[in-house]
Image (cartoon, rainbow, N blue to C red; front, side, top):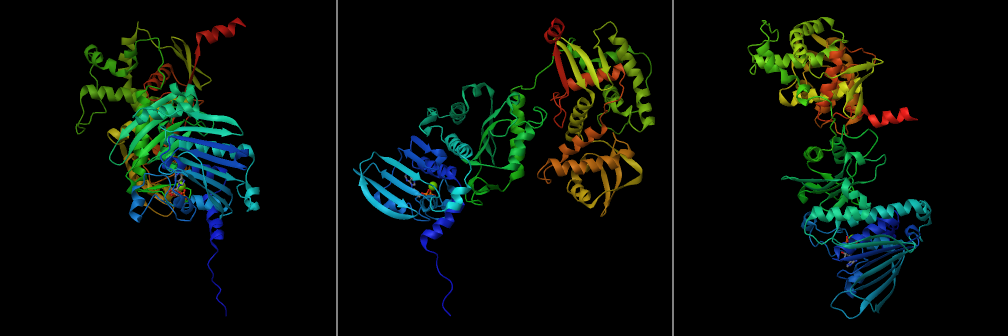
Length: 618
Ligand code: ADP
Ligand code: MG
């Protein structure tokens, strides 16, 4: 029998390889622009006709190629950028696979003109469908001009597969921008069907952040400048330089989200989530902040080669990177003070219950029994006890009042009574915050500029959420030991999810004695929740973890805090007395991020006096 296995002809192999590298005109644009950047050009021009379907031309003033290199450039695996496998780990260029030109040439008509500084005359090579048609000398200045015409002319199925011109143009513009961001010192120009779309001036400074800002403004428009919050962090495993958009300028569409790793554009869902997470509570759900973040990691910790087009990468230590990115962005947003502050009509000092604590010990001659007293608690003191109780009263009265455990509420309320009584006396004659409740759903209060309307459920969720997070990080949530172990029946999926976050659950106060196939046995639960609520909370928690966070191995404390806040918050339909209303208002506005509930719902709206006046003037 004759041999069955044959080597594919070179041009067929190239066509197949082309399928990986060249999916659409934008892929060609990316490869050609990157080659021009790698060639050290200071000016790069991209000229496109009919969304790249007719012509893609890139002109650069880089190093150019010698006649023999020009020919070699179209061979598969021909690259000047790596010589040994070790070089792969220390790449400072975009290309290295030596596949792009061969692939592009296999599926189009290519004309290359190029010249190095040393040569008088340049080289012109024409290739059709991977075959060299001519190789001549031309008059041309130093650099390279490459033209790619009629992409996929010899693969009609692929050509038909291309999208309409507007979609393909959008892809080209994206590819152009991504490269332009990585090289702010190069002038880039894009001309489409004889219209100049971009002409980006090179920046002159040696400061990466300043250069980047100029490039962002060049690409996104001049009014972007004031919307940028700088991001800068330098750790051993990650250096970050770049900008995020202010929360107030977030958009309904994704689109202005750019990650670059070691100066290469990448997409990374998990890290993207890290940035979005830092904006949580600052922007409404369904909107997206802009970001332009340049990450530098040791090349060894990065595997760029898992995808031929190289936008997907894998890091060794994604979770650490996630945490650094999230906290850096959060910190910068905080520093730039992007959360608005409200101008309540009264002395801010009065808003904090702590302000009263010293006075109250002086003024009250009555003996108080502190049922909270625990001599074993390290930080216990009379003042701390008072402060703690008072805080408890302010917070817990809010939800325990309508919670299932009436007795517990009662004891706390009675105990807290004396203190709030004192508070009340003290406050008499002072400017007390006036509030009232609407439809057992909203709490209204007067502020200097007009009025504020608070959604009681969303606000309370925010308050509880921050409280839990603080407690968990500072001291660990308190737990109540159960007299009899509590068995909670769940689905096996839920059990699996909760198993993964066992440690976090314990930090939050859920002590797990046993995990079975469809049952969890708890011997302690967080102080703030009642036994009856545990089923529902754990179910919700499992659901939230499954839906919200892409990587369940990441710390789930946040999700747990959210779920607890959601389950335990006062709901719409709960009447609040004036003390509770007042406490809600005070607590909300001493939150770090009062504007939105942990799940992104608005917690309050304000109506200005002018708005009101206008309403009456119609
Ligand atoms: P890679 O970029 O992965 O090396 P390419 O197929 O994109 O592979 O390019 C092959 C080689 O051709 C490059 O390594 C480089 O030496 C040369 N080359 C390509 N484009 C240019 C250019 N615009 N200027 C100078 N040399 C170029
Ligand atoms: Mg290349």
